[in-house]
Image (cartoon, rainbow, N blue to C red; front, side):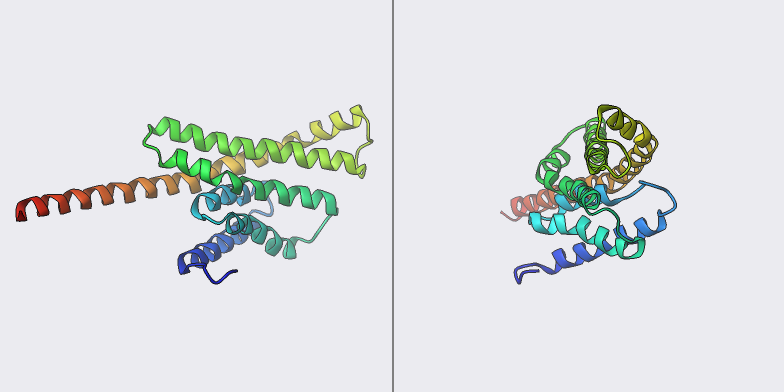
Length: 198
């Protein structure tokens, strides 16, 4: 970490990593149900430094995998990559969540973000598994078999991503609008005070 990191950055980073590791360990009996992609989306909104945002899901995965153990290197890298990339969507997602819009649009934005994370994870990791040739033949029938066998796991991935995306990003959006409302109220009070004093 560089010297220009603020206390807020370090505190948020540690809090998100601890939260992610604890949740992932608690959910180990539920295959593919994970908070990591949603945490990546949230960290992308919270940190202006892309490196910090990406480091959150990476740290969660590395620390928790010390308990779970490793597996095929290329599949492992595809999993890590898919769980880190959502952090890069932070600036776009933050601008959408900050904008004054109806609750339905906010829900659609969060839902779409969670869905895209699930689809990307499903496609990339299963393509990597198929290309590795460790479980399925490198043929079109092998590819179809690989994806069909992974559908139950996709349901778990989608459920986890959607639940945690709405939990994390929904809370973040409420906090954003609450702070904005408080600032507006304070500005009005100050403006009224200045007008009365003059």
